[in-house]
Image (cartoon, rainbow, N blue to C red):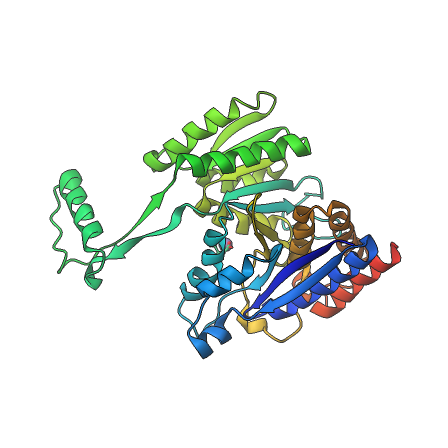
Length: 377
Ligand code: IPM
Ligand code: MN
């Protein structure tokens, strides 16, 4: 029997509760479909950081390399300044393992009320392929008043002088800046992934998102690469949407979209909107994928600290992320089994967490999904 080694990182807030349910469901489905899952917990998150000062160590990363996948709950804690855990753990893992695809299906499941009037499952069913390692996430930036990154600041000062005739006193005027960077290789690989996905799933159109009308350098380049890659897929329709416009079209005509490929930051923003189209953040899963390496699966939502320990968070996003993990590991049937079990419980409608208007607990939902899986034996 095949065994997959899974690194489990519960993280912060409701992370522990939702991962518990995910693991419960994954174990049930493994039994049904005849494979083993061997989970090992890693302590990364706010508690561990506050106790030891460690986010993720070099040794930790080396250790994680031995696993087949990472299953992550959520990160973020009010005791820690914003950015510390996010950059020190989540982004570190994404970058270290070069998980250059952030795959986020936006699908309205049967039995979930949609906030858009008259939209049914089938109307909302697209995939966002978000670039996951470049753009404004590369972390290049600085602030003058900290007196850091002097060389970079000198470049910015010259730019200001050249373009606007403005003189900045680096020791007096406060400025902050952050640079977005994209590479041909980085754009190429994620755009190609999106086209391959469209081809594989028989989806007829790939939409590219950018802001090439203003951020002409970075997204003009992105467009060029998109057009080049598109030539290899003559049977797939293509189009460009500006990021501001796509937020409008998501509400007006979500059924139009099939596969969307987007630079990192716009992908972050539009997938929270996408989550609402599918019924809420509690239902939106994501996969950080390196097709040739170690991938990591997590709900899109955050740690929701105020709900920690209350057993009321919706575990669907995390359970679904577990299904995406199995799919990436090659256990497609088991992955499909999880998704139809989730839908089964939703359609029946008796067990729902408060975000969906119900009164059930996190673990009651997980139990119900397990029950459906066991019955399908
Ligand atoms: C997400 C999150 C992260 C991101 C944060 C927590 C760093 O919002 O996964 O969408 O911006 O990518
Ligand atoms: Mn986000």
